[in-house]
Amino acid sequence: MRQRVLSGMRPTGKLHLGHLHGVLKNWVTLQHQYDCFFFVADWHALTTHYDDPSMLEASVFDMVIDWLAVGVDPQHCSMFIQSKVPEHAELHLLLSMITPLGWLERVPSYKDQQEKLKDKDLETYGFLGYPLLQSADILIYKAGSVPVGADQVAHVELTREVARRFNHMFGREPDFAERAQAIIKKMSKQAGRDYKGFCTAYQEQGQQEALLSGRELLAAQQNLSLSDKERLQGYLEGGGKTILVEPQALLTPAAKMPGLDGQKMSKSYNNTIALREPIDQVSKKISTMPTDPARVRRTDPGTPEKCPVWQLHEVYSDATTKEWVQQGCRSAGIGCLECKRPVIDAVIAELEPIQVRASDYEKNPDAVKAVLDKGRAAARETAGQTMQDVRQAMGLNYR
Image (cartoon, rainbow, N blue to C red; front, side):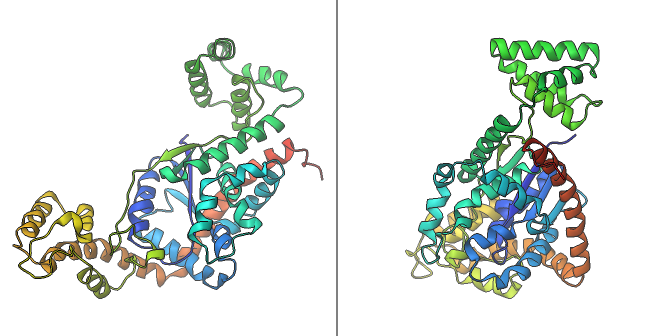
């Protein structure tokens, strides 16, 4: 059974090359290595755009079309809209009952976003609580890994703390030890002896290797249900049943996509090239990019590292082309328009097949909705199983 991965994206506008190189190419790779759930975080979009949700519906479907067009494949992953899986909201509400307020206030991005978005009123419960909603998004699928950049690790750590607190408070059943012993008897004699040995080595001697070996042994037990494995994992760790799985941060390669002005590509900086940007506009945008200020005249030599175009060569050009740029720029052997031409050609070559596939999906909205319906069904099945465990643990399973 492959480890589960969860990741999402807020539908707050058109996707651009920064999204492609920073997130989507990674998703295309991950979907062949993990059991992936990718979701449209429309509730998260409302935390900062609650005052104007008019763009939400169009942005949701445009974004999913872009996902499909770049190669995110519904045959290898589940794609769905967050608000179509109400279990997210239920778990978020229940976790809010046990999460200390200070945990949310100390999340680094809480203060950072308030500084960056000073023009918006973010003194709302929704904005304060959005990291906990992220935690609910992750925990409800028992995701073992969450692909994040270094700046998002704090969110995964919060999720781990919330899961740990929940399991500590609600995971210890009155007859937990007896249940665990009964499950051990379902294992083969050798596996049962090995498991007990790992328990002793970890709990009495603190051997981390025994904990890892015990987890591997449980993962390999095909005759045990998921609930049985979770209970024995909790027993191995000396606690209770693992109801909510503590995820690990899956650090993604740092892929800073430069914008047209040399800063990080971002809608906030108005320096983007959209994935469905008209090709003539792509050419025009790159052709009019600023260059090294030292190159006032065609005959003036320049320094590539001082030019925003060079950053795009770093992304798109091969070693031969980059050497040509270095020599030609420093000697004034080539002009700035000549330098930009290989970048223009490379970006267009990347975008044209994406735009063709996107156009096909635009003409067939029913196919897009079918992908989302299939993903929602898979998401609700998994989320429903988690919520059944959560309700039972919290004493909410009554009729």
